[in-house]
Length: 539
Image (cartoon, rainbow, N blue to C red; front, side):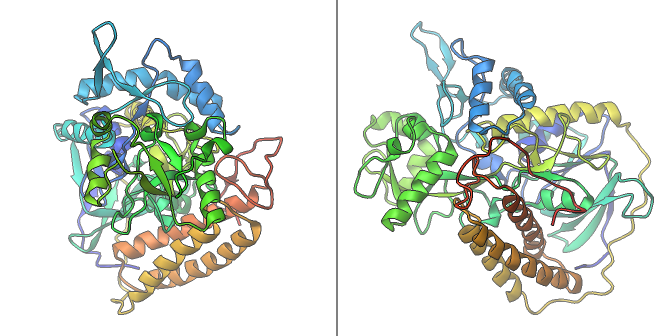
């Protein structure tokens, strides 16, 4: 459980956990008078934002409207979006893009019919218009690098790299009454020590939990740390059963989770069976431009029907120069595996991609714990409902990060008195010589989630998964109490907690809606209800 306590005690007016679009945007928006720390599990740019390909959905052209973007989002969310939240986000999309452009983000442009330069917008699944602004097929990389360049110019912001958060500390945990954040414990991987970090404002910007599944498009950092920590601190979570599986990830033994952007389908790529036959029109009138849940289930159905391990995504009928220009990253990566996408279909499979549920927040990112905020993929805001529409995620990160920053700025005074936090107690633990148990439990957890809690579910599968995950959690907790921590153990503990939340939420939903499809309840209920779990009574 506990390594050495001889670690430095740190203090920040605002402590941000995570350095993706949400975390860095928030830091940039906070006033210079506040001392800000940004906790990074690895290097500052390592996270889901950096690898995002598609772009940012925004209302930017005369033919598009806020109401149209809202309508598309509501449709994709399958009855569970909160319309007021959707409007809050979509109405702010133009100013978010203006802010990014002012920071130096270089979005793709084109020359219009009238001869003027304008943004090149693409269309993705679920959108009725071209409204996704992008930087080729590496939008997240461009945004991350410009945000990082801007943050590093701020003298009041410090990055704490190679440091993973362990647990949020609250006043009630210290016996001081109420439920107010006062800091956190974090494991410095370089020093191999736990640091005590005091802060009256802690912002959870840790991203999602797709690493809970065996196959995922996400980087290794997406281990649900923020959701698990917030839950242990006393926050409610909602709609954890809605895990989005991206329909198209490269199928290759050496590829390791390489995403094939939905923008390819927006530009005319066709999904085909291994024999070359198109199939999406049998499942939805929108064919390849149907929402992700529909496309992923269609691929899953065809793979199981045929007993094949992948299907094909074909853009070889489009002009080769256009393909290489719009998708240079995908082109080069596939080519490195011997696949020329201008002449050959891409072998693809679905993979866990996005956590649509999470920590419950308001429009300013506030959670159930005073002083604890959450922004980005770790949250449930009501924007995504039962299924996230493509390219709404980066928009959500930016809108809510800036909203939270404004609220924090108004409620936080520089130089606030920090509550004393006891050091991390390592007096009762030893070094483990059985780390193989961690590796085994890692593999078992991710496999059972993939097999039993994946794209298609049943009560029998979920109950079996729940029984095994609870046993795994007991084993992991016993290990955590006895031995020094390391990154694998910390992440495994968090993912096991998140897995149990996902399964409990899925068992409560007696219908099929959006990303949750169950063989026992194949129809959608006439009433749309969120699945809300409270720490005291969720089992």
